[in-house]
Amino acid sequence: MEKTLENVSQQQAAAPAAEAPLKLLGSWASSYTHRVQLALRLKGLEFEYAEEDLGNKSDELLRLNPVYKKVPVLVHGGRALPESVVILQYIDDAWPHTRPLLPSDPFDRALARFWCHFADNKLGPAVGAVFASTGSEQEAAVRQVHENLALIEAELREGAFKGRRFFGGDEVGILDVVLGCGSYWLAVFEEVMDGVRLVDADAFPLFHAWLRGFEALGEVRDTIPPVDRLLGYARGVRNMLLGLAGAGGGAAASTAAAEATAPVPAQAATDIAVDI
Ligand SMILES: N[C@@H](CCC(=O)N[C@@H](CS)C(=O)NCC(=O)O)C(=O)O
Image (tube, rainbow, N blue to C red):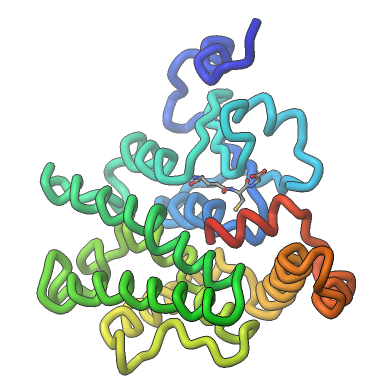
């Protein structure tokens, strides 16, 4: 039988009871994985975690996510679900009473989804472009990031999220999880790319304050890897990207790639550049 998501779910059991075991296939530096880890922690749910080697994906990952072959994949009672934002919505639907991630009002729910889509389709790729480029190309990408951050800042100042501690209100919601798991890379990237300024507290005071508040939460601190580890990983990816960009001509970049401190599979390098 052809390996389709539908076939995979047909082979799986009937709808799991909420208390059925949860297993997460993830990767330690993946902000998409962190989203799911954080949501499960916020809900107080126990889960088994399986680290994937993205350079040598397990048969289980390829079987459970035949469409994209990416992490995260959440397995609940034997049934597998890929795509982080889809998983977050599932977790909230399956466990609606503890720490709701989506608002109850239909319009507010749609708005939260809209901004999650923005994070994945506009802000994330812009940050990835900064990380993958140099010179004038990078300057243009930095401007794109600033334009996108200005849109969020305006929503916090006078738009949909005005006066809120978190995007979700007094407590973090789905957009906090989506934007927050990824935004810590901004500071890491600034450190790796000398002279690049992405989140200036003067230019984006409300976004900056929100991010500090998010990072201070216990569940977030339990989820985001130590900054030194992220820095080592990002340096390795950046060196590899520069090496790839300069292939055939960039001797210095190639040497840097060879000296990369973290072993980073080439595919992961492309991912981090496109999808933080
Ligand atoms: N849209 C997906 C993106 C997931 C994603 O890009 N995962 C990366 C790790 S950060 C991955 O598994 N990459 C492996 C590959 O592309 O081969 C989501 O939200 O879950």
